[in-house]
Amino acid sequence: MDLCYDEDQQAYREAVRQFADEVLAPIARTKYDFTQALTRKEVQAIAAELERHEIGTVAPLTAAGQPDLIYLGIFIEEISRIDVAFAALANALFFQVWDLAALLRSERQKQLRDAYPGPAGRGRLAAGRAQALDVARRRCGRHRGRGA
Image 1: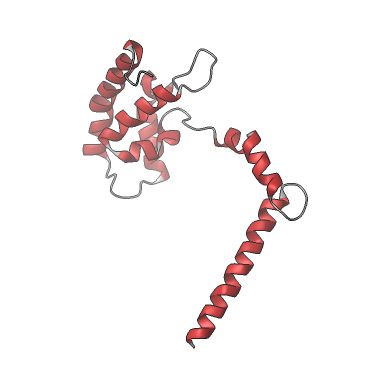
Image 2: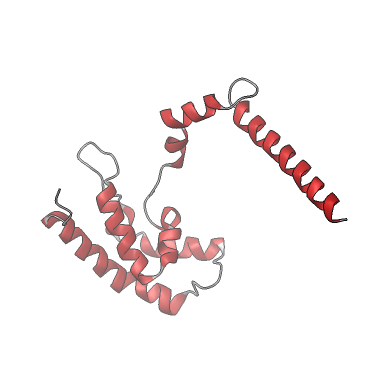
């Protein structure tokens, strides 16, 4: 197994690094304070500023049209070099990094939902959580009672 980037991956890495150094670094160092929570308006302003950069708005895809996880990893690694907040805000600032809805609709998630005891259908997960909360409350109540 070859763990080195091929020529295309290396070229992509260099392009993303250049984008990060030339575009993202000034945003992080002079325009916004990433040590504080950003407002929705600030996130929208940053996203609008990044819209004109194709490398930050077009997701790397495989020939089959699926997200290319190696290229995605390269992108996240390079933007994180500037500030990890860029990776945390990736879905809001760049292209869609993870399709969370598709992850929740996966066959594995369906199997996990079906394995939960309780009412039929989607309520099984909620019922299991409610039951766990009741158990936790009872335990906490007993624990507090001992110390009194």
